[in-house]
Each structure stands twice: as C-alpha cells, then as structure tokens.
Image (cartoon, rainbow, N blue to C red; front, side, top):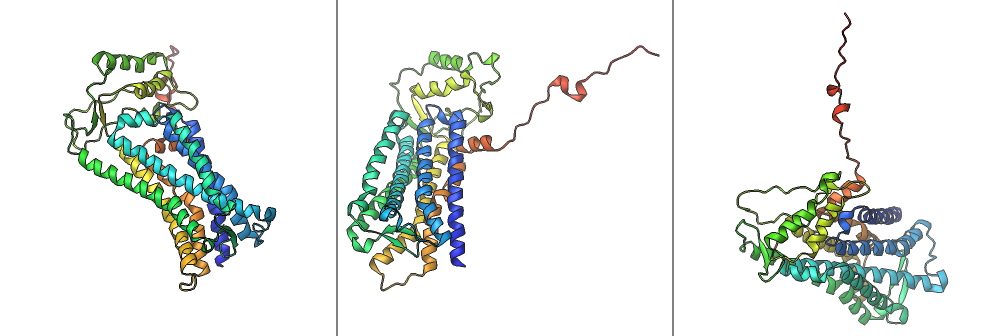
Length: 401
C-alpha cells in the first residue's frame, strides 16, 4: 500500500512540475509587461528556475517514478552505472542552481530597499545573463564531483533512486551540506531579515506626502519640470489614434498613512491586448528605466516580491529538510537510530515535490498574478456597441393608417 501511494505521488509530482513550469514560461513569453527593461531581469531568473526544474523532472524524478512503477531497478545497471551517476549529478546541479538563484533574487530585493540606484545599475538583462551562465558553469563543476571520485554513488532500493553514499566520504557530506543548503539559505535569510529591518527604519523617514523615501540624490540631472513634461508627452504621444490608451493616475489628496508609494513602473494589465500592445504604452517603462531619479520610494509590490522570494526559498528547503535528516542519520547514526522505509519514502517524495510546491507563491507578486490570470483565465467580455444595443435601435415610424 505504501509503495503504491509513493508511486502515485512521484508521478503526480513529475506531472505537476512539468505542467506548472511550462505554464510559467508561457506566461513570460506571452506577456510583454514581463519583458520590459524593468521586469525582464527578474523574468530571466524565473525562466532559468523553470528550465532547471524541468531538467530535474526529466532526468531525476521521472527515472525514480519509473522504478517505483515497474519495480525494475534499471537505473543501477543502465549504461554500466553511468546513468546512476548522471541522476546524482542532476540532483546536485538543480539543488545548487535553485539555492543560489534564490539568494541572488533576495540580494536584488536587498539592494532595492537599501540602494535602489545601484540596483538599477547592477540588475539589468545583460548582467543577469552573464550571472546565470557563470553560475551554470560553476555548479556543473561542483555537481560533477561524485563522478570524479570525490564521493561514491550507489543505488538505494528504499529510495527508488541513486544517491551519494555519504558514509564513504564524510568530507564530501560536509561540503555538500554547506554548498547546497547551508550557504544559500543563510544568504537568503540574512537578506530577508535586513529587508524587514530596513522597512522598519524607513517608516520613520517620510516624504511630505507620507511616502517612505529610500534614497535621495539631489545631484541628479534630468528630473526638472521640463523633463517631466517631456516624459508625459512621450507617454501620451499618439495615444488618441490607438485602441490602447495609457491611463492617467488618480491624484490622491491627503497624507499617505501607510507609506507605500504607487508603482511608477507599472502599467495596468488591462491596457494590454491579446497580440500587440500600444507603442505609446510600451515606451513609458523604457523611459522610466533609463531615467535618473532624485528620490526612490518603496511600493507595496516591492515588499510583496521580497515576501514571495523568501517564501519560495523557505518552501523549497522545507521540502528537503526530511531528506537531509535521513542522510544525517544514515551517515552518522546508522546503528543507533533506525529509520523506517515509510519515513524514507516520505522524505524522498517531498524532495521531488519541492519543485512544484514553490510555484504557487508566484501569485503573491503584483506583477506575476495579473499576468497569470490574464494568460489562462478567459474573463474578457465584449463591449456592446451603442448601435447594436437593443434599447438603442429606433423603431421605424410609418405613416400608414
């Protein structure tokens, strides 16, 4: 009974991970608002995480699920044991990529709350692409250590998969725990705590209208009255002849008590058509990305994005924690603490489900949630033209008696 439940859960984990990650890539490809100069660097990291999870499903989760379904231990004998090493490589590589990309995303939020001007200078698309490429090469080398002799790979029947036999190399176990789990989790936690502390400090630093001011640079050129007029002109240029109109922000009078500034860089998702967007609307985020600002504020979406990154990190490592406990017991307390097969199976299943359980947190983001809803929820209603409305049709008057 336990084996059949484990088999079903492994198959579901593989299916949901594939479907959800493919849907995430489709959302980013379809929605132009996620590919502006402001949002594209984060979208690159989202796509990288999705590709890494798909890679893990194809070469790590699916082979484990196939062994659980068929009962045939083909992994240990496939390609003279080379496939077993390949499965361990994929597991280590995907763990490393997930952990350090989460740490990088939390570092981006850290800069957004401490030095927004530097965040815009550092986190743009070309730098993020170089970072992802460097991270891929570095983690490929580290994940390949067991195949080079630094650690021994073995097949475990109670796990339906291959893994590193850590009792043969305790130094490799300590290195793996530090690089795959300890360091990235510590970095993400440190950046998140720093963001929360900074937020408490910013609540005491308000602009005259009540917005929380993160950074001020009075030496910046390009924020004069004439420059703002040029920006407004560029935003509304040609808008009268287009079907997609940029929206004018409502000016709210009074003091902003909560301190969160409205998103300057966000354009309403209702302005976006299915296939194309208006050039007048698309030019506005580009202008905002290139413009130097004297004052930087915190919006509520900035905080929600930080929460999203941390909750994704926490969910991912929480799913891996039971498996880490199994490894520690197997390495140091094998003869002292007996581990049941059911607990081992639960730990293995949770580790495989870590790739799909973190994805619902994308709904926390103020940019991703409307993009996902607009892509997959058909909630558009066609407007009835006045001359098509039943009440607008005039009855023909006749002179017949």
